[in-house]
Each structure stands twice: as structure tokens, then as C-alpha cells.
Image (cartoon, rainbow, N blue to C red; front, side, top):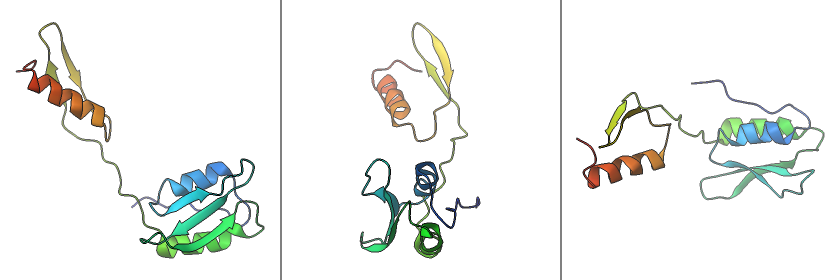
Length: 118
């Protein structure tokens, strides 16, 4: 498993908070005031576990502790290894879907549904 992104022990930036929140389903930025905000950790019932303002002197210490013990990591996004070949009466193309691409899957369905592929 890749190493987790941790906050610095003191104050932290929006970029640092966004990077940490992107790794967990139960960590988010709340009370966004533009120049300052809170990073919040919640449990599976959305009850508050811990929160702190980004400008608090030792904000990262407790946030890192609670994220390490109660953070729910997002599952890794894997790239499909299959390459899909789309055939159209006027052109042929080879496309590899981007990770999690609903639009690509919808396109494949529509092409197949309207008999535009072999």
C-alpha cells in the first residue's frame, strides 16, 4: 500500500489538506472561509471524530493521529488492462478507457446498442 500523505505537525495549507482529504472517504474540508478552513475527520455515521483550523499552532498533530487511527482509505483506482477496439462504419479507432470513465463505458454501450460495432 502506498505511503499515506501526512499533515505537518503545525499549521497546514489548503494544498496539503486537499491531498490528505483525497486519500480518505471520511476526511474533508469544512467551514471554508476562503483564507482559513477546518479539516474534519468523521466516523461512518458522519459523527465528528476530530477537527481543527488550518492556522492552529499544532493542528496537524491530533489530525494526523486521528486520521491514522480512524481514517477510511479510498480504494486504489486501477487502470483496466483491457484495450477496447471500437469499430465505426466510417473509421476505426483503438481506445483505452481512462480510470473510472463512465462516459467511455456509456459510449461503448451506445455504439453496441445501435449496432455500430462488430
